[in-house]
Image (cartoon, rainbow over all chains, first blue to last red; front, side):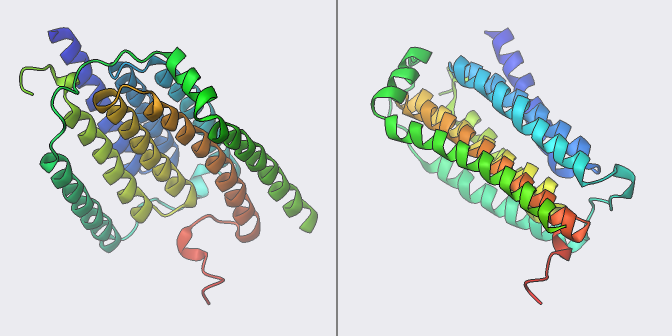
Length: 168
Length: 107
């Protein structure tokens, strides 16, 4: 139990450090690497939450697909040396900090105040089989709509790129 | 709740999701380029997905929270593809991707 707690604290600290690096890193490529670290940490948290399938999907989709997409965008947008610094004015940082901290404490108040039902903290034994059954039983329509959305998004991205080239 | 180990406490996970949300808000307001803002939005969506799985794990015995986390992942992938296409278009047209310079429709 001690070892499990230690590994959990390590994963949580890794996630928080990755999130801070994502937000505060000076270079955009370091921000992307911080995002990758955060996503790996969240995959670890999913494993602690008895959801290994979600953890695997997190690594496959976020780390494997979206991070690579963002890396391509960073490469397309231009060389790193010509990019202006990510630091903005102090006023803007103060605004962002105030908004984030105030929303953080408002939601923290909700979390602390809410009383969860007792007896529901048992370990639920949900497996990948249950998720699959839910997908093809009650969530059939949203599942198909997600595939339609992905097709439309891919076609839309391709069309955006093509039309821009024609205009030039 | 103190008898449970740390990773069986719902508040720890909710705190993690909240921290990701706060970091994402800071990034969206504070960052200058569009790609960094997109990265921050991904952070917020990660926090939302984490919250869904947490509530499913602790407060329910049906797998709908996990299913919605998978939906969030699909929507995040579609959103990233479209947003990056738009960013590339903006870069071709204006030669930079700073959000402060994109005020042609405002003027």
